[in-house]
Image (cartoon, rainbow, N blue to C red; front, top):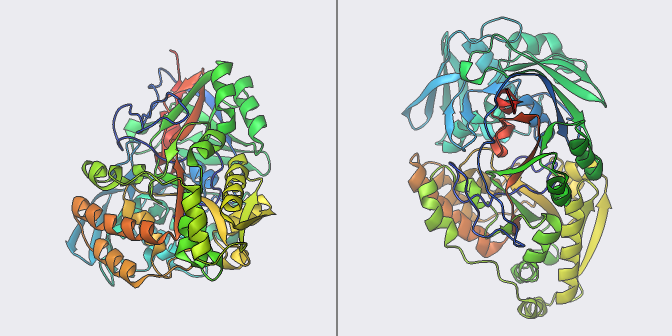
Length: 545
């Protein structure tokens, strides 16, 4: 029930945005939680010189480097530097030109993208409208199996209307579609390479041919991925400062922290919250926090069981001790979530954030009132099955807290452990949800528009994991998605937010900023969730001249 890409979820739980303003300067969230003093800023100090190479730690090996299948943090963290989109999400969570130098909307159902001239793929060939058409149409092809396919649900036609012009015709107004051209759905790759690589595309056996500041050099499966500098990169403001980037895969949180402290890894995003104190005390680098659009939530997977009763959902929400959850699961860095979509997801119209998000009431913590609701629902003793996994320590922490909350109010919350792969499958395979009532997610926006999050509660959407359906909600969503003005759209999105909070198909838990660790020899990295699409590695260089 939530945002594309809750796949690896909580894998480091400094992942949810309490960013006080989506965009500029160093900011603090409304509350630091557990007395922790931290700042949120979109970038780290600028690089002072070049590097031969640096090593970056991922919490898991990418399961693919196929842009159409990349629906998780590890693959997108790599691909952000290799492949590019028509539009670009900037570190301060704005949408800017990318491979399209401009775009227009001559009528509500027509989008025209003018492509940037002279852009070269990594093999030296020139990007054309044919490449854009092929790349986008591939997302729509059921044979591709792209989880991004639903982003194209309103598309009737994608056409080349000039050597450097692509026109997209929609069956109905869809504001979010154009915004998603700044995320995976808008990725452009060489059409010739797609045909040549075939089934090997995006695998360790295949090659990538994109336009980004780095090209794929090698993928040693089970060990590392290495990127090399693209000397012919079109954006001179993002000319890579390092000749090579090596990605290593470390699943164990303690081992990953040791890699940071020993210097075998120069840095990494989504730092294990359990390591915050150790990394700060180690004094081997900097732990930084950036803008985020994510919130740790509980998504209801089955509305036919105990959680089909609204009183039970409200009771479980009221029984959650969110402040203690934040201490245990997020290293004290975070705040209780007021709504399913985080504060940082409201970045597109930041002037509306105070009015539409900050005024929301704090979540209620009242165990006795929750127990009464369970009794009124005649649900005492009923079983709620919550899936858990070793995928990340935070998942177990939240799961145990939910189980304890259920016990206190008369619910029998049963924890069902599954493997990390099985946990990830829940978000892409409906069959994997059978027999489950609840899952812990880290839902986030790919773009800085809160409407993107709330589209995943629309009836029939790919991200609507529990198949929740509400006619009033669907009508309100369609109205918001036809409003081109960001401020007005934010007001319409607030109505969706209210319905979601009234009905609780998703139970908000907490928000925390994005995190990144930088060893002493490097700096320049963007700190926030925009790293999933912004070519972040290009800005990293030496911390000293």
